[in-house]
Image 1 (cartoon, rainbow, N blue to C red):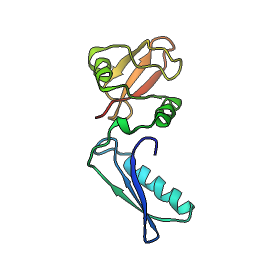
Image 2 (image 1 turned 120 degrees about the vertical axis):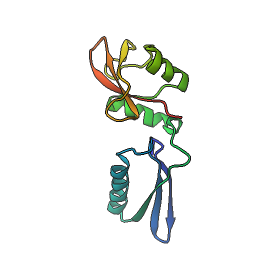
Image 3 (image 1 turned 60 degrees about the horizontal axis):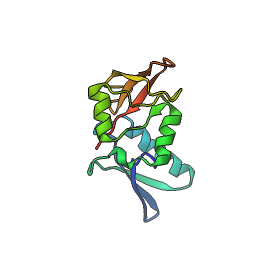
Image 4 (image 1 turned 90 degrees about the vertical axis):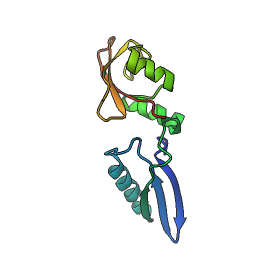
Length: 137
């Protein structure tokens, strides 16, 4: 919910209909996310139907403050605003905060991290690698 991937969840004739939107088209995690939602609802005693919605496209603006904090706690730097994101990814500015030691002495290692919606960074202070969730609009 805090990532903004769940768009709606409504009851229709005793079935929970859940609409989800991928962070980017073709996101490989959507099947797992859909299955996890189905299992959670089943364990709570509900039948469900999951529907993938592509429009409007997901945006990082939909991540709640709680979701941003959860990303950082997990070791993924939360997205910056669009302008700062371009400065970081295209101009090498050091604006992304290390999720380990909180330093901004970080650098881009690769435009793509563990998934296409993330970039790989490394902290030059503590030497830890980490993902940065790109700003998507």
